[in-house]
Amino acid sequence: MTDNAWAYTKNAALAALLADNQIRHIRIRAYRPRTNGKVERFHETMAREWATATPTRPTDTAPRALPYWIRYYNEQRPHGALGGQSPNSRVRNLPRHDIQADTSRTASSGCAPP
Image (cartoon, rainbow, N blue to C red; front, side, top):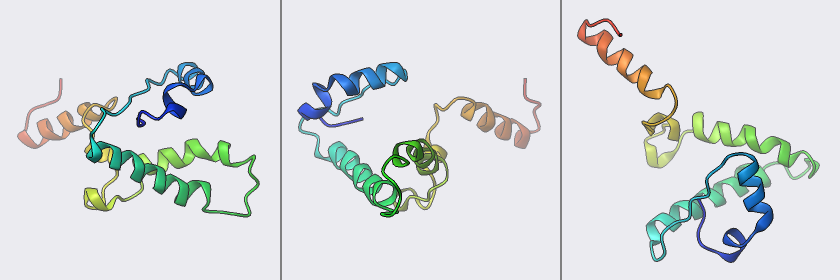
């Protein structure tokens, strides 16, 4: 998710990268400061924790480290706005996430899962 800046909407290299990785580019709706604030906050966190966290790290290793940081950010990093939970703990449409939730619910009700 990005804002509608020219650097994101007209960037052929970004479009190719997203297409190659089967990532859908979602742009925020115009004049929605609340949504834009979330995007900006993510960029701020990424810059602070990933891009500049280790200034002595060679710049060629940073791109290789990004997927690991994104996974940590989504799956393990506690978020203050989420009561210390990770974003994935709050999302209901992740692969297999609903199965786990359904299993725990049916187990507590005494019903066997299908």
